[in-house]
Image 1 (cartoon, rainbow, N blue to C red):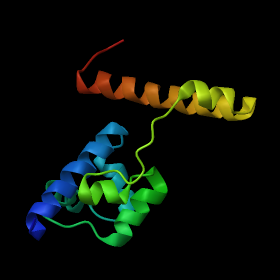
Image 2 (image 1 turned 30 degrees about the vertical axis):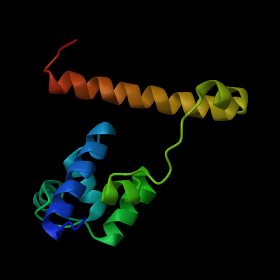
Image 3 (image 1 turned 120 degrees about the vertical axis):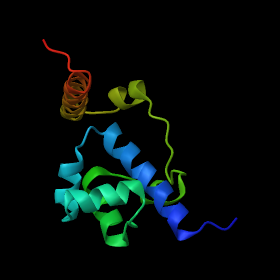
Image 4 (image 1 turned 90 degrees about the vertical axis):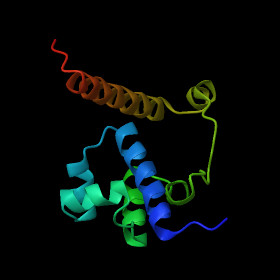
Length: 121
């Protein structure tokens, strides 16, 4: 199956946007990380501009975005996460750090949803 560069860039951009929104990270934050303007980053997400290998590595090292998934749409390391197993086989410190991260993520997600739907507390 032959995919031309433009179609590939569009698909990569869609997956990049999906990953960014799933993590509740702003376009501005990723643009700054990648050392590009917000306009250039918008072009990456829309597929007008292709994502370079060095930018893929930055996204991988900073956010854990799977380069294989961004390029192909198939994760290179699909793993089922078993919370009970993790909790049972972690130190108290590891569990506390994990739950702190989960709570911080949920807090960020709630704020994002509230902003998105203009909900006031």
